[in-house]
Image 1 (spheres, rainbow, N blue to C red):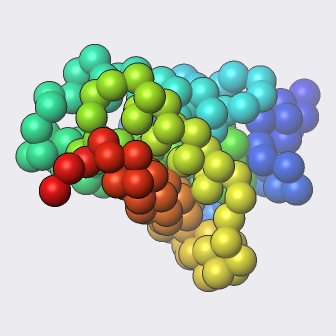
Image 2: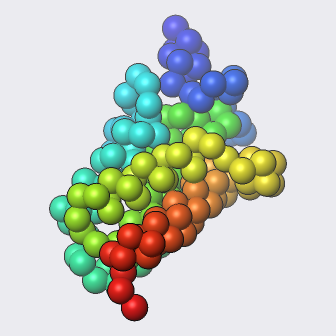
Length: 179
């Protein structure tokens, strides 16, 4: 029964078999809380979208509107994501859908420096989700396969960078940024 549950919450095509030895108890607890994006990894479907949406709300409510706070938050999400993603793979299998802290990390990149207004924030969310779901072959082949939580995190980092570049280009065209 537990094995069936593991398989149902992982991404399609993933066996759900743990990779390596289980992490220590304290690391498992951190992964169950932080690695699952404060529980968004436990939703039955759309875990990545749930994680991104929760992070968007947390960003809007709690991250101060200044460059240092935004960069600190983005870097902190990456620092948390790499080890908890690695521990998640050791608990639930390769790149498990249950791990959504990587969405926090990638979404943070897409949100850096954008106005705290509904349209730009929703555009950052939508573009990040698009680039996270539709991966460039280069990212799928060379980034996702990196070991130790790096592949799980850095494919979302790449999606965040692509979303950020696209968003800034669209905002420049729309005249939202005036330089």
